[in-house]
Amino acid sequence: MTDSGTAGSNKPRGLILYYSGSGNTRLACRYMAANIDSIDFELFNMVGGRIPDLRDCAIVGFAVFTDFLAPPQLVKTYLENFPLQQDKPAFVFNTYGFINGKTLKILADWVGARGFKVVAGHSLHTPESYPPMVAGGHGNKQAPNEKELKAFKRFVDDLETACKRISLNQEVGKGKIPVGWLYSVLPTFSRTRSRNDMGIKYVDAELCKECHTCEKLCPYKAIKLDPKPIFDMDKCYGCWSCFNHCPNKAIYTKKFRGRGHYPKPIDALKEKLAV
Ligand SMILES: Cc1cc2nc3c(=O)[nH]c(=O)nc-3n(C[C@H](O)[C@H](O)[C@H](O)COP(=O)(O)O)c2cc1C
Image (cartoon, rainbow, N blue to C red; front, side, top):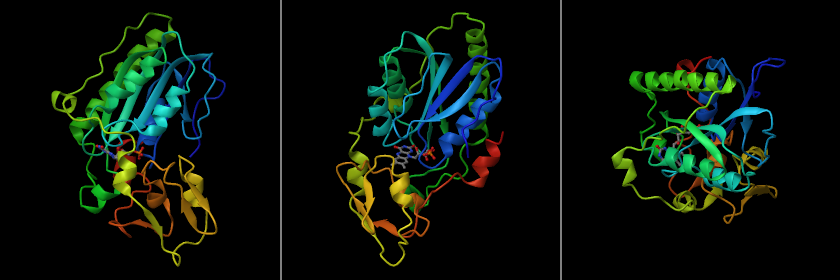
C-alpha cells in the first residue's frame, strides 16, 4: 500500500505519522485521512526515523499501537529526536488489542513535550497482534464492536470539526485525553519488557529460505542474515515483527512455534474500516 494524499489539492495539508506493526493502525489512519475533508492528510511512516518537513502542515497526527500498555520504544526514540514545535496542532491515536493502559495519555505527553498542542485523541479496540494472546485464543477478532466503531467514527467527526477550524485559521484549544480510572492505576512497564517477555528467538533452518523479510521489516534494525537471521538482543524490543511476518513461519520462541501469527489486518477489520 502506498501512503495517500490528494495530489494538487488546494486544501491545507496534514500529516499522520504512524507506527503500525501489522497494519491495524495504518488501516485506521487511512480511514481517518479519507473521512476528513477539510485537510488533505497524507500518511507518513515513523519506521526508519525520517523526520518530515512540517512547515506547510496545518495539523499532525501521531498514531501507534499499544505495546505493553504504552507506545512502543520506537515512538519514544522518534519523538525524542523530533524538532521542537511552537504550538502546532496535533492529534493522537492508538489501536490496542486487549488492555489499552495509558497508551494515549503517554503518547499525548510525549507529543506535547515536543511543543505540539494536542487538540484531540482516541483509542480504538482492534484485533490482537500480540502472538502470545493470539495463540492463547484471545485474538479479539470481533473488535471493534458496534459501540467501539461508532465511538471511533464520532471521533473522526469531531476531528473534522477541529480540522475545519484549523483550516480557517480559527483557534482550537487543547483536547482532553481520556484515561479510565482503572488504566490510571495500572503500572507503566519499562520499554524493554516486551523484549524480555519474548525472549530468545530461534530459526528453523529448514523452513528459513533466507528471503531477508525479517531483516527488512525489523523496525529496530536488530536482524542481520549470515546466511540465516542473527538477532542482536540489545537492539531488539520484542515487537514480534520477525515472528509475525516470516512468510515460512521459520522464526519461533521458546513458547511459541508455528502458531499465533498476526501478519496483517484480518478481513473483518478491513471491512469495518473500508474507505
Ligand atoms: C509486542 C506487542 C505488545 C502488545 N501489547 C499490548 C498491550 O499491552 N495491550 C493491548 O491491548 N494490546 C497489545 N498489543 C496488541 C496491539 O496493540 C494491537 O493488536 C494493535 O491493533 C496492533 O496494531 P498494528 O497492527 O498497527 O501493529 C501488543 C502487540 C504487540 C505486537
